[in-house]
Figure 1 (cartoon, protein in one colour):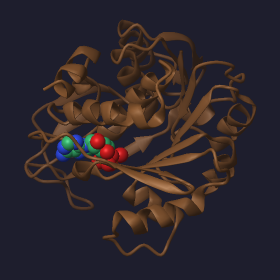
Figure 2: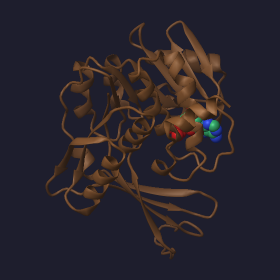
Figure 3: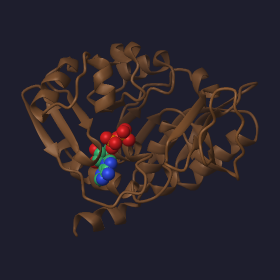
Length: 294
Ligand code: ADP
C-alpha cells in the first residue's frame, strides 16, 4: 500500500480582477472550496492511480475537517489514521487569484502543525512532504522498512536531517536551489545532476528533480537520466508536482523500478495540468495509460 504522512488543508479560493495592495479592500464575486494540502493531494493522486492508499494526518474539529475526511474517503482512501485534534482548526489555504492567474496565498497550518510521529511503515511505500512537522517525520523515516519517498516541498533547510533516511527525494528546481545555493539558473542537465548529487548520502539513493514542462531528471550517484514531459496544452499546473509524487508512489508500490515508473508518473502529471485545481484534475489510471499508448 501507499502510506502518506502529510498535510490536509481546505483551500478557500476567490477570483478577483486584481489582488489587493496592503491596507486595501477589494470585492470578489464568489469563493470556491476545494480539498487541498500536499498530503491530501498526493493521496488522491495515488488512489486514482489504483493504489491501496492510507492517509496519516490531522484535521481540526468541526465542519472543515469532516468535509476533508469525507472527500478522502470518497476516493477510497483509508482515513482511520486521520486524527481529529480538539480545539484546533483544520489547515486552511486562503487563495486569491487575479485575472492574469497571479495569486496570493496565506496558509494556516492548524491541525497539521500538531501531527505526531506515526508508527513505522513496514511494507509498500511511505510518502511525505514538508507541510507537517519535521519532528513527526524523522522517527517514521528512520524506522520504516517501506520504500521511503520525501517530496521536499516547501523546501525547509531543517529537513536535511531526513535525507539520510530516504530512498528517493523528489523536488523541483526552485526547491533544489534552496538546498544547494548559490543558485544561478538556468543550468544544463549535467550541472543540475552534479549539484543534486550533493544531497545524496548513500549509493542506493536517487533524487528526482522536476522541471515543469521540461520533464524531470532522475539522478543517482554515478548516472542521470532525463524523463521528457508529455506535451499537452496546459490550463493550470497547480498540483502537477503532487500528482507526480502520488502517482510515482503508486507505481513503485506495484513493484515497478524507479526508471520504469517515472515516464508513467510524468504522463499522469501532464494530464493533471489539463484541468484547474489540484484534486479535481488528478487523472484516473486508465487515462494515464491511454495517453502513453497514444
Ligand atoms: P511543481 O508543481 O512542484 O512545481 P513541476 O512544475 O516541476 O512541479 O511539475 C511536476 C511534473 O509535472 C513535471 O516533472 C512534468 O512531468 C509535469 N508537468 C508540469 N508542467 C507540465 C506541462 N506544462 N506539460 C507537461 N507536463 C508538465
